[in-house]
Length: 303
Image (tube, rainbow, N blue to C red):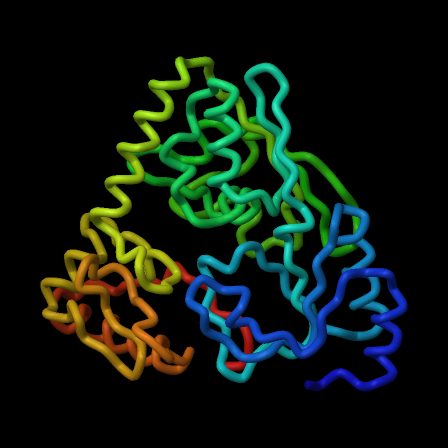
């Protein structure tokens, strides 16, 4: 850990919920990653602002994460602080045909709230294992539905502590990108407009989407979802399978037998195993088909 006892003492006196020397393997769906010097879990926008300002004042690097479902953390861990927007910022409320959700709310929870209120539009998005903040950030989508289809607006706080709201039309949505991509804005919440529908109809559609996910994805193993972005004119999983890489492994990291677009933690995988496997896949696919696969998962820490 790189934090001095003096800095630790100052952090402990901030009133924020902070855990020191925290194993990031407990905070990623890959179940991989070394320790972060500090993990901060704000309860609201004001505490996000406080966490950012405190880190700046103390000269601590900080990183923002959600549910850790699209993340590979280095075996060496993360120097500085990780600000996690999840359990402490997960409120969801309904007003007529609109759902308001904090950035840390799980998409599955939002989908359940929509179902209970007979609101349609979130059925297929509810199976994505991430948070509202992460979904807005990358314009998450599944089975023909995209978050941009139902978004009204999102709220944010930037690194200077200023807050704001962005209308749906100004999000610059694209394939797995938005106005937030590589910006200094941290998503704090979002509003979605849904449509009224019979509860049984919504429930049936949710079952259809859930079955597709179970049939096609290796849900029994830790993973970070689809590893690569879809190349124009191709499907990453099909290219990887065509290259003969289904089941190929390096250490505990393995290309899923069920869906070649996924790398799974087959037991005891390290971040270096996953990274080596990613590089091997990219090299093999390029040599065979001339297609460069671009990573969709984010790398965090010292690689």
